[in-house]
Length: 459
Image (cartoon, rainbow, N blue to C red):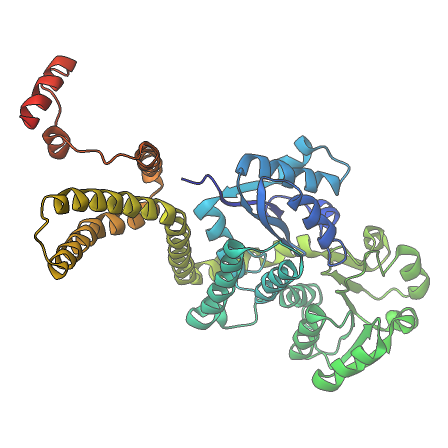
């Protein structure tokens, strides 16, 4: 059978710190070059890159999994100052069914920092859409894989309890702020970045009773549009420094490549202000310089710091996730059955072609001695042999499709494929001895005994 399989190489908040995750992050401007470099390898048929604030993962349909993994490791290393061996310490490798299950868990929010968060499903869809826009990046396997992942993610949200509530990174960030202050009522906040994460943050802040929320964005019109729909006041990025000393909470969620809140800029803007400022940086790459946390009265938290906050609540939520885990596992098994049955298709066609060759040869041998048959009788005999062949092969076809989903059957399927290729190459229809039909062999295993029994069978 074909050695091609689905392979995954990645890192996430489970395996790598934020400093490394932001270095390997693949944004929309660099994904095209990254995929092109990976696809240059003959070991890789298809490639989709999923890169978010918590993970960067290469999903590959690979002709040679080991070589494909090496290419992906090099791609990670190229984005850092590490060698392939060093960066590999932070990576995980998954193949086949395990890779499928992982993606389905990711899409369902089961592998997220905040279990059940909804943003990741949109990010999986964005990665797939980006792959579709790149030449030859997505073929039939990853096309079906990512479409299935989106369907599974949707099912998790509509059919399990994880779809209820407002689990998200912004909601966890706002809970952290509430822990610092005790209560958020009467507090003021600023959200920098009016993208999806910024909008979710704004909703969370308003729901906690914060009535005065400033929204700053690179384009002022976008900020105005956001507050008109949800609430708050829009300001331009240039106005941030003049108003930042008036807020208690600053949340940043831009897609900027460089920090938008610097140590010197914040120090200058706050002046002698001694009131506490909670800075929640939920962007990747990070929006806030790490040195900001050293300023008097400033409490800086990034995405990795949220793990400490969500830890206790996530244990309870993980218990609620059990039905979702079952649903995801069932879909992964079904997908893998489809993938393996797709692989076994050529084997089934080969088996049918071999059977058809034998049928035609035996039919020709039979009809040679039946010259007196009418044309209709010949057609009836031919139809009967076709029906016989179909009935004989049907159980084998079903068994092969079932065996395709069983990893323990790979060796058997490979041997069957080799036998069919050998039979096709010989151009002869082989006849089975009685021993082969019964599945037994010579009592003593000797060649003489086998030859004698074969002669008797033919006698």
